[in-house]
Amino acid sequence: MSGPAGDGLIATIRERRPLVHMITNLVSMAACAQTVKSLGAATIFAHAAEEAAEIAGTADAVVLNVGTSVPGMDRTAVQVAEACAARSIPVVLDPLGSGASRFRSRLARALLDTGAVRMVSGNVAELADLCGVPSVIRGADAVSATAPADEVCMKLAESAQVIAAVSGRTDYVGDGRQLAAITNGHPVMGQVVGTGSARSAVLGAFAAVAGADMFTATVTGVCAYGIAGELAAATGRGPGYLLPEVCNQLSVMDDEMVATRSRVTTSAPRDPS
Image (cartoon, rainbow, N blue to C red; front, side, top):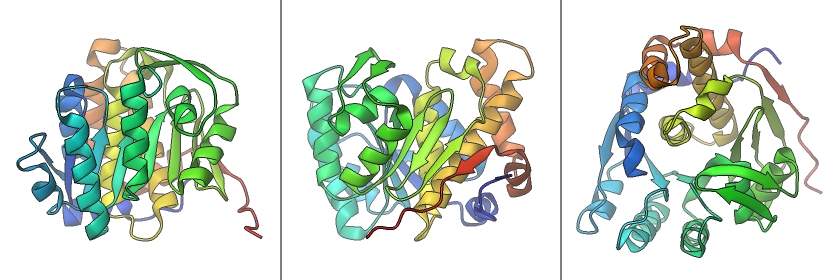
């Protein structure tokens, strides 16, 4: 498959300038804000319980990243998800470090239980932890899972009724019926702090304009981010320069570039019967 069928999504983001509200990893807030801004969407961060749910209610999509544990964050994130569920606002969950502690695992599962989460983005160990597949995680990095990444992707999608996006040498996106394997990206992206959180933020912008086809929007967003990483790495300037250059590449990316440069293989949808 030459590219995803998400024709017009980047143009739609730039035309509509959707608002993406994020409660995210404090280490990578600037990267999350700039990648989304570079695509043409607007951002706001509200972590305080006094305003987070109110602001979420004005957003077109919300990204919840559990990567930084601060007192009260768990209750606030759940309140935001519940507010989004009531208003049908799509939520992207980044279960950063899920499996590293019982607290993070419980919080990620509680967010899934609200019914607001439409998309889950993370590494294979994080997503394995959410669907009961034994895994090993060290800090925020996946070490291993007892099932292949494509199986973890489909298992979580089926069990949680979400679009699952697993990052790795090959990225996978699944909805429980169909699976896309994406080989865009560059190994140096795994050496840079914040690239995973920034990817989830970018997926928030695509979720904001996805409409009913969240699968295609997720595939397109993963491809776009991977292509930006490839082009950024081609400058040869090293890991410290990567994220700013990813933002530069996202700022000039268009739908034609994604369609022509994407490397995607999609399985035929399975018969639900």
